[in-house]
Length: 220
Image 1 (cartoon, rainbow, N blue to C red):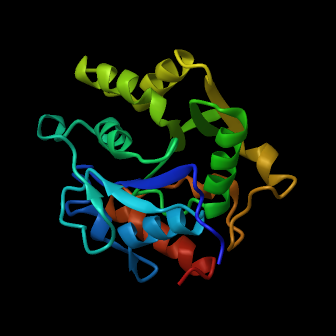
Image 2: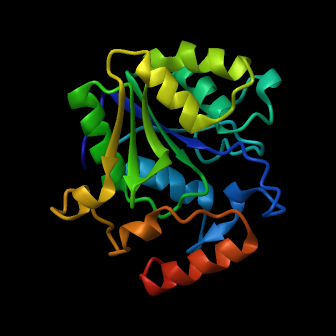
């Protein structure tokens, strides 16, 4: 078994309101597993220790949970990132929302490797020229800057992460997924196209679509 990465640790963001799903997304089933199990599995397959940040249900049976501060309740994924970074024991925190269950572990591994080698304060990816907020690798040195932005009322993750990174020596790094896929530096174990990796689960219709996709790719 591969050794765990000693410079990064992973967090599944599970604090959303799940209003369109009408039940906690973390506990809905995809390919016979709950989304929280799938997401934790992705993190662990990327050779990272995994914890859960900001959950609204009791998910402690699946992994250790870092709750949001009481005053941050309902403030979105940035609150979960801030809480997690305040508890992060390694240089980098890796964040994956619970509703992105098709992200390949190889992509997260590559992002972590890039962050370690380049020292980037924030590392993200783009698909077809569009920057994806998640998954993201964040240097814990950004913790104070992100907390200041959240406390000021700014809850936009992409803007806040970009601004925090620009104020730190490592800066902001965006990798084009297409340039990682072509030389097979990153791939999906079941052959899903890169455009499908970022499909998320926000509603029952989304869940049906992803279950059909998973069945077609042999993920069941």
